[in-house]
Each structure stands twice: as structure tokens, then as C-alpha cells.
Image (tube, rainbow, N blue to C red):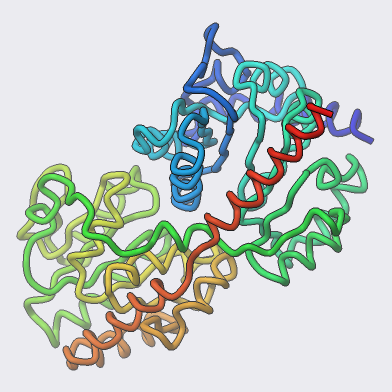
Length: 422
């Protein structure tokens, strides 16, 4: 069945590549995406050679503590991190000395994946969430690498799609050496999809480890750009959410005239469009990168500053939850000790909802419910502080997945070394 996947892959890629070449998320790094690397790429420090892959900027949050754990326990390891999106690549570059190289994931074509694997030469390839790329997995296995899925998840609403695809192309899960799943129900779904039972472990989600509150370094000029006073913070918003949220802000402003708003769009290239919406609602607008801290609404138009920016919020709403997106990361503001509100569509962050709901997190049904809840909380500063402390403690109470995941990976590498020595 694999030849069918290869043929269909080439056909689909031929049709889609012009769009991928122009798309804001994937237009950079084309040589690397086709597997063409300079000679001597990522010679690094030594062995083992670890290739960590996270699709986008948000996924790198969960990979950082894994990279830290590898670096702490195997200081001579060579660590390469790849991403699909340009924003993910930019975030990965900020990992600094934790990693030796940052690159782009190759297109899942036989030639591209074979060349990329040969260049990176991983002892272990670590894929994240649902990043199941059959040709990349096959190329890694043929090279002799171990393949691991970490923070594994399979959307229950897409199980039929997975089964149909695997029936056509063969089951790539059969070639994965270790599936480290977030939850028991995720492990059950992996079994249903044909993953070998002996290779499945439930270890949790390493993104919780990345959220342990710390003072960290404040980005230069951030506090001044966001301004002073109470802030209603709308984080990771998507198309169609800012208009209703601005109308919520208008209601809040009537009761609390000193309140200001910060909007952090999930995609910063939407900043100009959002500014137009702000002005259409009668508010003045400022930008993190262009000044305007005294404006009614400030737009955070930078990448990688959201976590620190949440520190300046009074009350947070996290977007992607009033749309079909399925939510965004609600634990980032919680880790900063902020009460967190979010909408009804959180299917991609069910584990986070379980951590936070009733412990500093409040789920609202629609913008009207959001406005009523936010008004109530803003009228009760003591309750705001109480919920913020609860949210922070909820984040502190979960963790350890990174250590468990690296335990399993090191054990796998030791087994590989023993097999080679035998």
C-alpha cells in the first residue's frame, strides 16, 4: 500500500507546492524542506544524536523541557530541532545552547526525507502530538534510527479518517518504536489504530513542565509598550473573535473606565486588520512594535513574548475557543497567576481544561456570558487574586512528563546500543 501513498503524495505536492511556497507559514527554508543540507551539517557535540520535531511555535513549548532534560542528562548529545512553520523555526532558534541546530522538517516525499535523515543522522527521531509522517518514519527506520512519538494524541473525531488513511497506505504506527501518550484515552485510541501494545506508555504532557512559573527575563520595553493600569487581555485570538471581544471590552469599560485591553493575535500578520476593527469600535489603538501604550487597545504584534506579556494582565481570555479552532494554551496565563476565561470549543486542549477548570479557570458559553463573568470578577478584586493563585497552583501541581519521556527514550537508546553490540 505504501507505493499508493508515495504516488498520491507526489500528485498532491505538485498541486499544493505553489501555495506552500507563497504561504506565510512555509515559504522559507525550501532547500532544507527538500532535504538539501550543507556538507557537515550538525556535527554537534557527540552522541547520541537526537532529532526533536515540533510543528509550530506552540508545539516548541512542549519540546523545550525535553531538550533541557536531554541536555542535563546527556550533555554530550547533539540535539537538532525541526519545525514546519516559519514562526516555529524562529521560536526554536531562541532555544540557544540547548540545541545544536535548528532546521525545517522535510516535505514527506521519499527523496526529501531520505536526504534529510542522512544529513541529520539521528540515533533517535522524536515526533510530537500527531506528527505522523510515513516517509520520514520509513527513512529514519532504514537509516537505523529509533522513532518515538511524544505527547501523543489522536483526535477522537478523526479516528475514521486515520483508519481510512492507514488502510490505504499501511499503518505507520507499526514502525514507531515508542508511543508516549498524554492520557489513558489517547493510549486506547493508539491501540485502536493498530499501534503495538508493548510500545505504548502513558507519560503525560511535557508542555506542563514548560509552564512552571518563573520570573524569567522581561523582554526589553514590553512593560512600557503595554502601558499601566488594569488590563483585559485577549490572548491567541483568531479571525472572527476580535469583533465580539471588543464589544465585550466596551461593556467592561462602561463599568471600569480605567480598564484597557491588550489583544495578542495568534497570527501577528493580522495586526493591521485588527487595528481597523479597534478603530471601527471607537477605540484608539497602539502596537507593541510602534508605540501607543496610552491607547485604549494595544496589539501585541510580536512573536515569543506572549508568556511574559500575560504577567501584566488583570484578567485573561484565551482565544481559539469561540471558533472551530479548538482552543489555545490556557495554562500560560494560569502559570503567571492570572484568572483565565475561555470559550466552549476547547477540544484540542481537553487535558488543560481538566487541570484548570474550577481551579482558576472559567469556561464561558458565548461573548455575553464572558462579559457578565468578567464584570463580576472586576468588581471583586479579592476574588480575582484568589482565582489567580488557584490557577498558578494548578499548574504547579502537574508535571514530570519530560523526565518520564526522556527516561523511556534513554532506555530505548540503551537497548539499541546493546543490540548493536551483541
